[in-house]
Length: 382
Image 1 (cartoon, one colour):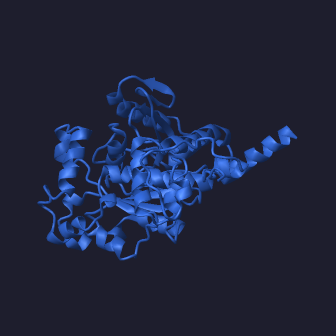
Image 2 (cartoon, rainbow, N blue to C red):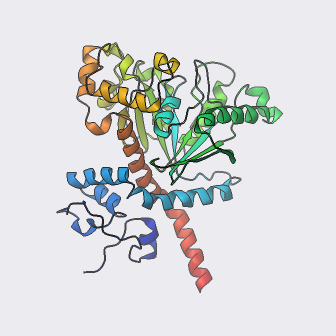
Image 3 (tube, one colour):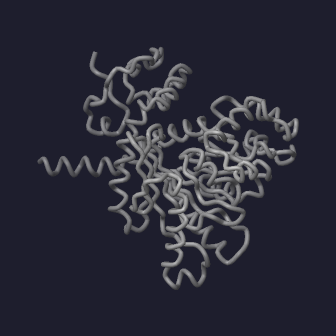
């Protein structure tokens, strides 16, 4: 039997056998698509094409083990190579994952949990520029902010703050006059470390409900989420009714069917009222999250002041969702949380979902660039 085709674009566009077809022990045969069972690179496509529960579980395990992310890594590296070439191209947006939310919903804490980086945070606006967070698994620690190397992980947050302050100072006078305190310059944060998920996320400033810069931030966010190439991640505060959170309204305007919208629900440990239960609202279908949603518990104010580590926070989160620390929330919220499936709660579930969404989205979004490159190669070889 001929070797099965890889569903990744590198193979499908060139119509050649997958160069990464290597046996991956531990993936069970699938009665629907067993021809893909032995290929770690094709596992993503297999799990998307069939309803085999075994394969969906195997895909999640493969992501965590690093087998599948190594295939997606090539797609991410392609985007990284293309991006500098298109910086000055108006109207061109490379595929990506854009993180949006109202101020103080916990965006920075979510990114902190995923990356282990201490982001600038506080009771006021702390993200004053877009931040592109590039995470890659690597053999040893390496980090940079706007190209400047950083040897100490604990200093990354301060370097991010300094870079944002510099970007705001260096804005054109015409921008500064109508937009105090914000800039559209993207701060590039890159982190390589063993065990990191291969993810690229663009964190945008929190949505403002008042102030002179409100319209600037709104335009910046709507510009990014309106591109069909981008997945929108709405970070939602479980203690506030969803109708009061602009992020979900703007995402709905940009993506009415919710096909490229994903939700992260924060502060479940502070949801003391059933009236603001975001889970009921999401399950009702009134707010479409076609890519799903995950509930996470971030560090609270007391834990931040006590300098609770990211690892300790992860253990607190595990205890919370296991029912050991559900005190303080309403009975209704407690029952709603207990009904969540394992892939809807916790940091690891969020990372798994982001990896799956990123892999699937990149494969489709890079088709125009792959085709262009394929045509150029054919013309050069003629």
